[in-house]
Image (cartoon, rainbow, N blue to C red; front, top):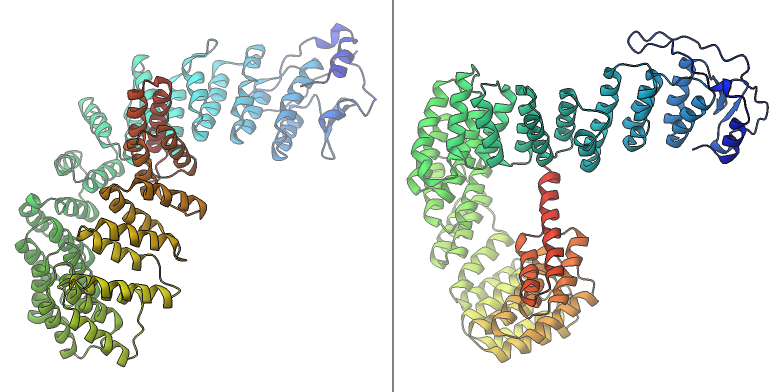
Length: 640
């Protein structure tokens, strides 16, 4: 604002300088004109006048950045405001407006709108709203006020400043926003991904008795879909259909995508029917979404095969990648016959399917513990249809028998690979060894270790852990201890996983003393504590009731600045809360919030419940608010 010196200087001039000059500038036709200054307007000759604002006012002009702008030319004033905006001189824009007024020149709607635009476009909507009352002093219609308010609302929405936006929409005493302002808010909230706020605006529009159109609902619906708030989106969609409003094809497509991804097949079917009623053609991508969503539930596979048929009749067919995706989902959610039928459909459409994609499906079989499906796929693709297998396919077949241990079947597939002329490698050897170790076949494991040494394969940490597991499974704990200690002493790159294998072995045998002995050895070794060891050891220590060791491990993690994730923090948080040490848990949760770690509601509720039981309502309320704030922001800021 103006300096006290300026105010004193102005008040010494005759009051005639403040006579208003009617604006000759019209916002409607953008004609520029000049204003004749009052005859007795004082000529300022002091070049220091206004110098505290980095611009100078003298000889009926304002100097800024080496250029002069006439006080009585609205064109010059416009250009000055633009120049100040380019130089990010936001306060100077406000000062210039006041300077012009103090010189008896009317601030017209064009100058105000230009100032609004420059400030709002640069995230200074709060400053712009400070100029709004000046519209009442100008000879302008309501249209200019609406334009200014719309600019501010758009800026507030884009910035995510919901409090300021709601104040403009709902609490202004001197101005009642029109429907265009509400639509501006909905559009801005869509861009800034604020679905809850858009619902509030839409409800307010209904309460105000405004005549809503499909575009109003469309803004909110898309915003909800982007954030995957499907229950609310479904409710709004029902309302749209009840009012017979139209929905754009891309919005339909977006709904099909989101509901398909969520496995909400009933909604997808209804959407497709509504699309047809509205005259939209079902495209290939929509068919794919339907098939994928159906493949996520086992009971839907009969319908899935029917839809594949309809899709082909409509002139589309799944690409090879989609077929393999459906087959993988069938492995997880379906039955052997579903996998077989989909595989046969794929082979009908593609003579030479991608062998790496087949390997990925067999890997899914291994992860799901379904070796019988993996063997069926090999027989169908590689035997009956002569698709040439590679090492990746055989490696995943071997992996099946590490999850469902059968050294006999693993040997069979290992030999099958050799018969196909494929080279053996370290990964295949390790998988074969793991299968033998899981069955406690110690001699076979040691024999393979010797073979690997003869073939110059490196004895890495993974293989060493397999050997330790073989000793444990063969009930040779002393030899397992010796081997683990040898690995720890000779392999400087080994981690605490070597120790953990022994800890887990004794835990499975119920030997609490040995568990604690080897835990202490691990913590006193020169090996670095890792988040994986922390979680694994924590669960065992909690099971055997060694709370002091848990606390010592937690303290060690802080001393070594271990970068732990949310899962580590959640474990220790619930531990301390369960022990009644609520203020320690309070500090841990505070650290999680500061670090922005992914937390679920149980992280907060364990403290809320604890403080409520202690009668500390203030602390309980504090974490309730934090939880609500956290998950409101998560919904409104989630990156799709």
